[in-house]
Length: 517
Image (cartoon, rainbow, N blue to C red; front, side, top):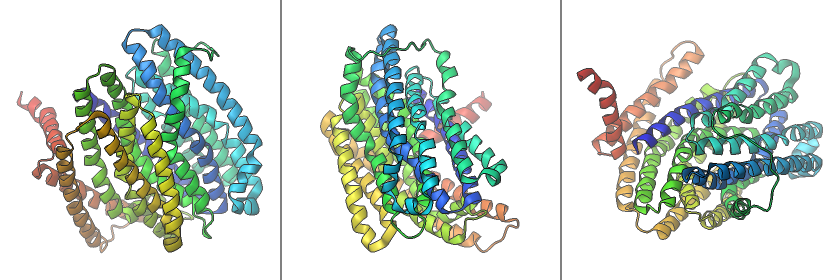
């Protein structure tokens, strides 16, 4: 578990850096263009191909890693490489055809959002047609990440979004005045293509070399083809929910699509940066333990990871809600973004944060099921989550308007995680949930106390002015965050939460043992 924890730590750091740059890039173009109809269209056009292909891409990786890594583990490298050759070739052909069909169908797709057709139809068609071919690169990105992770190389897959973020930031700073939203669309397309291209050199450092092979009648391809549909149903829950949220949000009077996507990215991508770091490292581990039929090791690893997820994500929920105004003002209150936009985003953020722990638990337990070659239960759960999200959104929106959308999203996430925990326990037997729940209770209590302290510190710090507005905003965010982190760690240590003790032991070993020696 030490090597796994070290890998998770490194990948998490890289992904947090990557996500920070991504948020910085969105802050730059938001300040340049504001919450205009052009940004609404850009946001929608960026999300549609991502939504369409995220589910399929995740399904591909989920199916590829167990088969590919399994053959590598048993020494059947030739068979593993031939399998990936076929997967890459078939995927390229499929995504080329899918992109072409989507480009042709663009006028029909715009029917989903009448507001865009009536206010700037030309920009909507242009944006969608530029963005749809990015699905080809999304596909390669997912497959290349799966190959590298199977070889135990996790760092480069975590880096993929850094170059694309840099490209968008440079465009926003240097060229946005000259080329506007259309230029931003093209810059984003160029940036997203790099996410797949930068993984080619690290793949060349492995033993694998690609050879085109368009063979459908192959035992491994047939096995993968049978596994993909149920996995696709399971992984599509978030994507379809996001598509519904975008379309439904566009029905409200104010420009909500851009801000809702921005907040989703801020909350979900920041949190999922950690979660995906964990699942990227742990999924091959789950697969190996399942292949060896080491169920005790499998259970121990699962409980340890769920406990670690809770230790990070529960205080993140409390922390994000406590400092949401300061965080959003620092990130996005520039240029054309006004205080009413900040207030709107802050309320959305609080509601999305409620479901944070559900996102994390679902991703981990999904991977546990996939490693056991059980794709049906996550698929059923995904359908249930979609039904909950849509139903609750429609009900809540009648009472609280657009705010019902993020709240329903969180409700569906929490519901899905609870259902999966029940199903995995039924699948593999007792998990020692009593100890996990005791740990979680301590974490929740520590997080609530931390929340109270952070809110109090916010009220106190608000009275002071630290000069230059950028410095003032930064200090008013950093101080409560630092206090909150210190209080949380101290409380969890006093409550004897295992993760706090492990962290302190590592600090002692790294810094004090060497000095003593």
